[in-house]
Amino acid sequence: MKLTHFLGAILILISSTTETVAGEGDVLTCGKTTVSLFNSAIKESPFYVLKVKAPVAEFHYPYYMDREIFMFRCETSATGKMYVLFNWMCGGTGCNEAGFGLVDTDTGKIRLEPRGRWRSDGNADRASKILGYPIKPFSCEEFSRTSTGAPGAKGELCFVSPQELG
Image 1 (cartoon, rainbow, N blue to C red):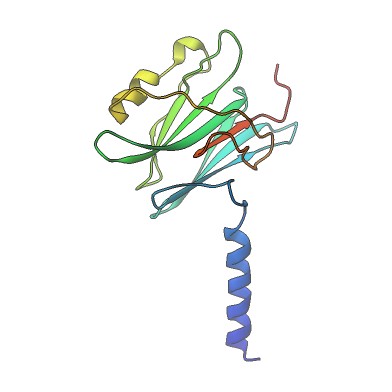
Image 2 (cartoon, rainbow, N blue to C red):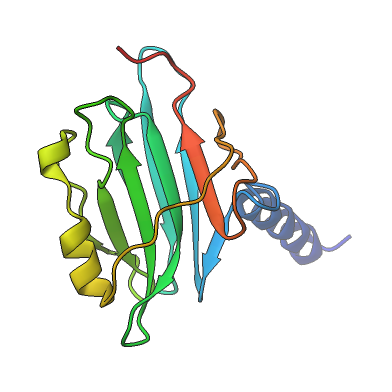
């Protein structure tokens, strides 16, 4: 076997193992951008990482697990612009249930960051203004405690912290 064939085979093997990190249903595709979530099960380091692979670059956005629920889906604005809409929230009575973020699918950059964890920190109005219409609630019926997305509603990935938060 020629060295060039051997190196080519290794490159194909490496690219296939790094590209296929999550199985079917674990990656959301919005246009030419793919989105997945790393859900840490490490007790000493609870966090999420939203991985956005856009046509121009790849980004990793970390979020601490002081809010245990993370959901995302594709949204097309009233003007036809595509975004990844995510909601990073907690489930307590004083918690923010509208911790929305928007990722621009052309650039992979965050257009709108979620605000604080308390109810008064909600930003549904800002997300709705960017999208050009009121945000429909997520319809998740199941939540995953791993980095593998729970089936939930079609086109949505829904996660919950694997750790007891308190």
